[in-house]
Image (tube, rainbow, N blue to C red; front, side, top):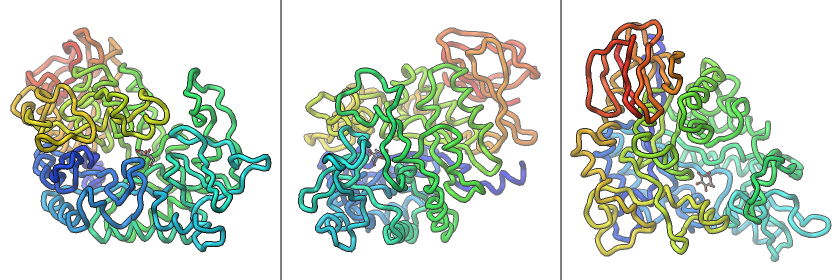
Length: 539
Ligand code: GLC
């Protein structure tokens, strides 16, 4: 273990911070964040104590899906800056010891990408086969029954050439044909382009979708489809059997990984869902696929309950082969804010301690450190295609609102008199970086303390994880150990105080409480926790 810790990679030791560039900091006064805005906040991120920044897409894009519809994989949209700004961002981040991870969207392009414009121009265009075109079904209509994640069928008819093209998201996001070697070569080259510019890693969008069933068979009906689905939600009515997670996808993962391995110490993170046995295969049988298949289980498969959280962590620890490094995510640009999902600010603090003391790379989503909550979006202001197509309750805009920097106009996100692209949270005058960083007991102070403690403590960033059975079992207790260095984490998931005995331990010292008001020696025969309190105890 000692030896292993010394050889941990940056993406194992470090903490990732996701930035949604549109919403972070606007320096041009158009209500949309930009790369210069990220540069201006690098000192903030450095002080906060994160190690790597993941930027959601900033590529040229018609913004049908806010950048996840890419019109050029090797440039920057003028809305966000240009390649020179990007190069400065990389240099300035590296100067502060921060790594840069960018989003890579290989499954689909924009319908305005020159490749697709060529592909749709005629049936015999050399790029026709770069996308997935099919004749109508024998009786007419789409070639199979697949639905789009964003509502409606996954196929759109193109009258000019009399065929349908596949798109499992917006119709403006046609899917590339990864069975075509030219597509593969062109896309792999885009990885090299960014690695040559100094990019340290990629977050790979919907990476389990690249290869589809060769025969594009119909998906079977989903017997557990929720009732009252919107009529156009064809997707949720089907089991996703033939459109994703095909066995052949793993060969592509290995090729992607080999390209990253042409460069020094780059990291492959992939967006993957699915059952644990399927998901774990994405590390590769010999650790030769992704470094980190994103693990959304704490975010998606839990209730706010100690045993529910522990079950997810223990199942993950049991499922991972020795070479596989765990990781955890509690929020991102597609999900409700964690403070809203788990109940409120008290729960958000416990969640922060959990995420930052588990074994495995944590990913934070911008604004979590100030406890940002879902922002209700009036129906007429909805931007997200998912919300527009499937109904206001499905909009992801609620978690994409502007970062709250200070109590000034527009929360310091954009200048006074400019309308931000999404509404600001109503509580921004009190919930913002300036106010919370001056408060020694704020959630922001807690995040900073946790991040700096983790970074300085080998047992926390790299040690073993060992859960303990305790009474009452609505407290989640685990050890993090590295040689002689031992820490105990105890998280009270309830709104009632409690006292518990820690098996096998007699005494320790609280070094951090989620309440930020105690550092003291404690007896572990009778450890008292307040409502919604988490503590880290040095043993
Ligand atoms: C991923 C992204 C999401 C996007 C979709 C299509 O799920 O996280 O924001 O809409 O892929 O690219």
